[in-house]
Image 1 (tube, chains in turn yellow, purple):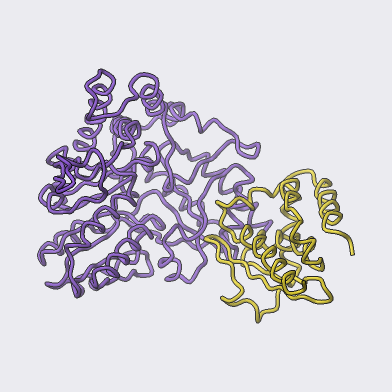
Image 2: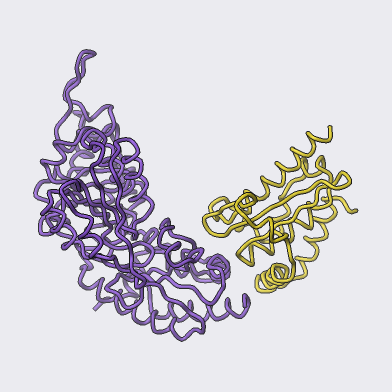
Length: 141
Length: 404
């Protein structure tokens, strides 16, 4: 399995191939449309992160010392970004997730979606990913 | 006739680019832009006048006090209040509402009834809920109809001798509906209830006469009508404001202080503890001057034309759903297209330099009523143009192609 850093580098390289924002957004929309991201049974209030704009649902499970994240959103662009975050953080160890940073989002030209003012649930989702990692790390050690 | 080209020169921000495109600003219902005439007053204040008011004997303090009190008189005249001291400077609509709500803490008893409407902004819901929790008063909500108007018959049925206060917005922020406040006020008064009208969304479009309305409290924010953020006003009838306990304790609001007993200052100072937003207050006055020079009749006529044009253009987009269409309303359009999430539309429009508001607009009960996560809201001002609407329509069509 590639490291978080390597996957982030791959994604940045992929995004650098896009000429303009339209291609970038079309790619994210495709990601958002194509991926079944979470089991329907987790799309309830227990797993929800409420933004004032879009909603995000997140679930995490520990399997063979790595965390498997699943998540979803009711907005497609948010869902596309979630797909990218899951690609980066799912199947990684709690320890690696805790120390990973998320600066790569800036380099993808998606920074605006992670501004706290957007209230789309993504900022809270990243926080939640780290919280899960912290909780599982405590459990393991 | 409005000379939009000329007017746009007053607003430096309209020249800026967003994501490489000319900014198209359609989020006026959240915050309107600031003309040079107001920006200059702000610059002048800090360049020439900056001092604390009401206390200093020195020249700067006197000049700053004069400018601040002149602004109060401008606001008084604009809203036709009987007395300048019936205008209380606040941090904005939300603070104005909280000021009144806090005062009623000691004036209500369990079982008293308050009425709000389903069209309210959260800031005209939550303070009253908090007040009810503290006092044991009961909150009743006037329901809305599917066309975005209030169910006025329900309102009539709620009124009785236990009704103490009624809170309704003049114009709904999410839909732009103009509520029949004259009727609401008159009817409440027949039961001896007091009425607070949230004028935040009405003030940029309608010139309100508080005496003619016979309203008890009227509140608004400067940033909705070309003034700065963080300043607003509470109008209240003098006998009501005199009876209302102070909101915050501190300097400015006292007549004399000893450790045994403090006596409060008279109106308006009783409610203006601490050093206020002096520059903001003065700029609020300048913003009213600017709007009045243009003329509210001219403004609302032009904005109505923009609204009709935008409504007709939007209706040609397949799958469009407009909320509160065909009503007596201000230049606000709330809509959705098919099943597309408003956040997605807003994000794509932003890439094309177009600022709209998306989400529940701090009016969640309205969204729950329509069973939607939110809407896209385009709100127009007198400095917007028909060409900008055309560009938004083209951008929306592109967004739909990308998102569907």
